[in-house]
Length: 220
Length: 313
Image (cartoon, rainbow over all chains, first blue to last red; front, side, top):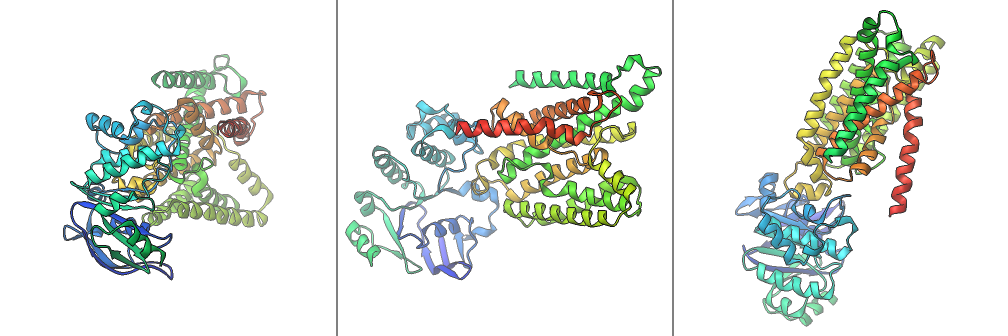
């Protein structure tokens, strides 16, 4: 993906200004930054949910606003939070809704996130963490080449969080994953491409930057 | 689910039969010339009630879905107010352009056309809701202004129209309604899965490939035609479109719009048939206003649903 001269503005509030960035086809990018620094806006702009004020974003040299809804739905999986959750819908149906009928992969997706035992519960009755995992299972089931995850570890317990980061790291070998997060395990930070959102800019950190270096940047 | 639908359909058929036989409090077969009464009055009346209840309930279901608001109903887009305005102009100003039915159809079609043009550019349901509610206020304001300058007998006939009735239609009009109704039902059923997807929220649905503006247009079209044609043939029939979806969602306990649309259709039709039966035969020779009867029937139901929901949460 290629981002050219991207500017995002809400009325007079400039969030990101004149961003130029190229992202590899696979790999894990971790977006870090303080509240309001433009992480979520950037993710939304990447998949076309937010129209940039200026600039353009290209996927395979094609501007994303030229992609049809169907094409977009086969390229991007976007996940911020699982709400709203429909009444009376089981977790299995929630994961599967709007996607394929691949039963084997559905089972695998539920299993990955340890959801098989509650697969037939109403998704509305589950805890926030379980709902969050259901949403991530949906992302995995969709099997798209690009994942855009906005704070995916919200509500996850310690074990699930550890599992999640290992899972994301292994998945990033075959797809592009861009993940906005505040709480990331240190080994993952050192192994992934870190991008810091600050002062309306995106700053790519050199690979292997330590957590301390990044904290330094964030606390400036 | 099949069993529940079967129960609903049997209930509907029973009410249809009861309505035809006992409407006006006098059993059909005690009348002389009962064939004429059956074909000219009872059957058209029962079929109009059936169609109006069915399509309005589907419309209510779709409105509650796209606005994500359990208080939304088919009249929330301002369409029945637009029909009322056209009827008011026709009755109150003596500017007759082809009678009440034509006026209501023209009024609702013009407004519906405008609404669809607008909703092509709206991907935000709150904006659509505001446009509907504001236009409704505007139309009602124009109507009450007109009423204050109108002759008393004109006002009375307008108010009578506003009370709603299934009894005023000729067999031909009932046939028109009977043709439109299955078309609307099938149209809604054809798009049922898209409404399931919309339950995940507009943003998520669009990331799964659903064109949210298109689904708004589909919902506006169904609700518009349903409200417009009901207002034209029966007056502004209220409340059934709000009550039936709630009953169906609770009883069927499903998210699936394929089932909900079917259930709402039969449930709504049963409610209007029952209300009409009560309105016409509770006291013989007296017709209670239909809308009042519907609200008396439906309001406690809505209250019960809301209170039950509260307790569950």
